[in-house]
Image (cartoon, rainbow, N blue to C red; front, side, top):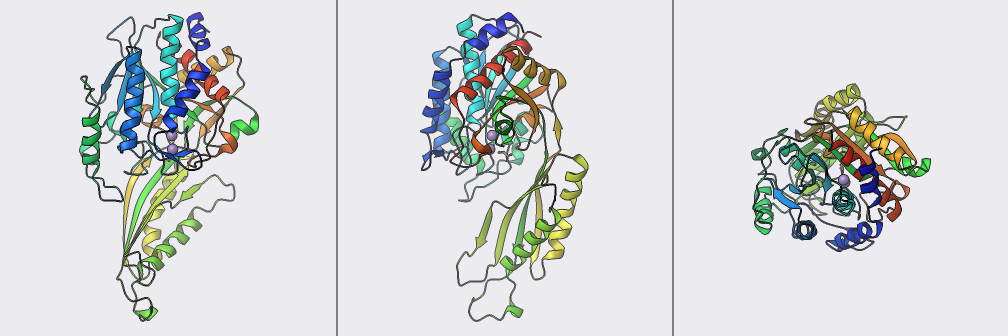
Length: 417
Ligand code: GLV
Ligand code: MN
Ligand code: MN
């Protein structure tokens, strides 16, 4: 390992990193130790302001793009060289934990501070990015900020997405941008030399294997759909079943058919219906409309393609009484990370004498979109019992610091290439 990479890594301050997690966890705190920090909400704005205050204290420069992705830059000796980037997201699930996303942002900031304290200069600038709306819990789809930054989808395409309250993304975004009026505006798709994202594993593999660092090799494929079932509302007590167009009954039939489609004795396929809106949503009225989300995942490209293509015909066949509209909202093919970045992460873990293993990610991350535009990799640290998207999500201060050290060393390495 380069000496300057080691010096910087050893300057990572475990206590500072832990205290910053605690500070961030106060924003949107919910009972059970969790956080609810929806994208582009008042809480998201507060988290952005806190991050900016820490960045400015260190005289790092900050910029923002038109979808609200925030960038914190530590200069390199070649001012105009394409930066190496790290980061993750600050939004959370409605009942999210204190580490999903925010760890990658705070570990990135810690890496920049550690480099300052070690007096390390890198050839390329290094930037920490806080991506807008990674979770997609309020505005679907997920990984929206990186998707738009990398040009995978135009901004105009997502501006009219609405949340459950009918608020448009364009309005929430305008409020967020007005609350953080940064002088420097960032263009989408500006060149990036490499990207490394640190994250809690969100699964049990590292903990079970007793390893501290996960060298992430890629991310499984994903399909999202909205399925809208439209029937007719009627009196629950008086309307014979034969006369009904019960949207809930058809929604249940569709979900049962999809459960059968995705049944997998090997337990590799993932199938989730996590969101359902029922109209009129009254116990004694037959449902006229049911809108629900479908999330299907698999690491094998052929399998995820087959499953994704089966959703619409199966939903139409299963619905016996109502109209069905199937709208695909996200299609991410499985992604394999860059060998050079993966090797740099592994070499950093080895050089710092941390136990490590290679593994693939079950969760989606912004790294998936960055992998389309630059050499990309990820670092995982263990989380307690693999629990995530849950208030009880937990990780140890020592593991978080270890992951930040690996990140720091790998960033110094890549930023000098
Ligand atoms: C991100 O949180 C995902 O849905 O995998
Ligand atoms: Mn995340
Ligand atoms: Mn998440």
